[in-house]
Length: 111
Length: 114
Image (tube, rainbow over all chains, first blue to last red; front, side, top):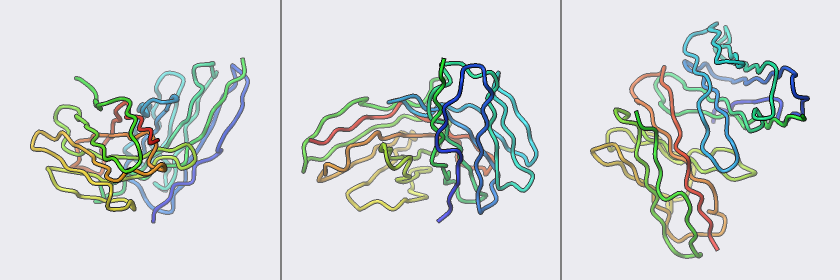
């Protein structure tokens, strides 16, 4: 079945550093979504992207919908301790109504 | 607008029992998806309902079933519980009629099987 490769799997960074993570797919997506999940809670939507090349920001977060429609990137600037969590990407293909999820990037911020 | 709600939040059952979890989507959303999340497996798709019909299905045994009501609320049932069914069960809703859609998650139900 369809798979999303999300990298890195985990990362430790210093507070104040910028963070980048990405997802790549073998399939073309019409929608890319980025979520953050805290332990024991449901994923919270951070950014939604609907158009190839689209660049969208939400505070210190910026995400881009790749031109090929097969990848997406999430950047976090000036990380803070509350950025700790697991970040998931998800893609939606035309006509399926079934979201494909990445395996997640576990972010740990060292104060 | 209220978000996706799930009840109960926590549940403890013993092997062999069955369990029913409930999900109320965001008002106006007609698609409800269910996911199982375990520490080592990430988000595993169970099934998706739209207008009371199962439209997509994951690779789970028949012990896992669901349904959707006319008000878009959905229930998920697991029969003959096994220890490996212990997980966080997440429900998510979306409008469900476009390939440019956004899915929102509920807080999840933490199921522990003893």
